[in-house]
Amino acid sequence: MASAFVLVNCHFPFDIRIKDEILKMPSMANVYRISGRYDLIVKVNGNTEEEVKEIISDINRLRGVDATVTIMIAKEHMKSSEKVV
Image 1: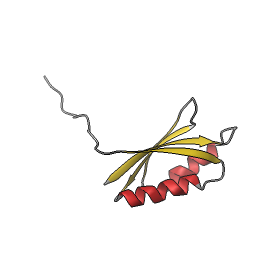
Image 2: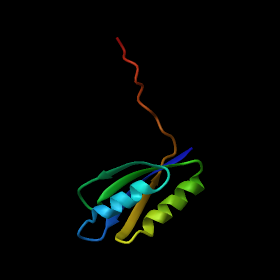
Image 3: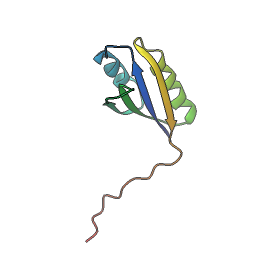
């Protein structure tokens, strides 16, 4: 499994359609609307790093997306859901 976080900068003003189109794509884990230089942060999951890169290319091709920054996840550490008593 390969994953990445993608920071998405959209054309001003932000169009909610972009978020909706990203959510329709395969392997989308989460999409967050954020403030600051970027408009969205997206977590992408795929079977391989190549698949993740293809999905990111699809995001870049969306009308209204000006730029993206990709952060590939080298290793994911999950917080344990077990309670310590």
